Length: 240
Image (cartoon, rainbow, N blue to C red; front, side, top):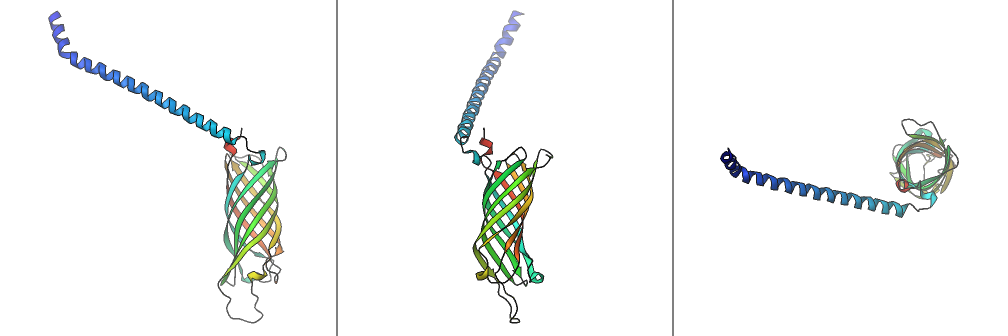
């Protein structure tokens, strides 16, 4: 019996030795990998803490600063030429922030660069470039699906910084009205109202703007703009 056992062990010993060495190597490798992963996780956590510490001391008014991009449809209302006017599409880029005024109300401020377009007689298109300064209040509505909804109401001041014309007017009667970029007003202001939705660092808004000043000095029509805006809060994730 002992001889059989010795023969079996002598035959199997290289295999047993191989298995022992293999298990030892795998154990050491697993332990090393686990330690390395833990070190990397700790280093990553330290970097995040350092980054948060770096941005956590920003001024209070920057806590809810966001970048805004959007598209719009603009046209002229209350114009004597309303039958021959069409809306055009434009874009918007800017920065905005807000400050709480109470439990459900907020004061918003911002600056945008925007383009607005309209066409006349389906042949001549006009593009105007503006610096806009929205100032408005928002009021919280009941939360739905963990989204913060707010009603917006306020004003917007606007300064025209450029204008261009695409296309030429056809030959027609001498009394045919023609818009001219040289006659466009440089400043405007008006009412702003809309609805916004906010979740985590993301922001969405539908709004409308109605200007009170004339677009063209020779016509009584003012500008009307419908906006779809998207925003992202730049520093909210670092707020303590």
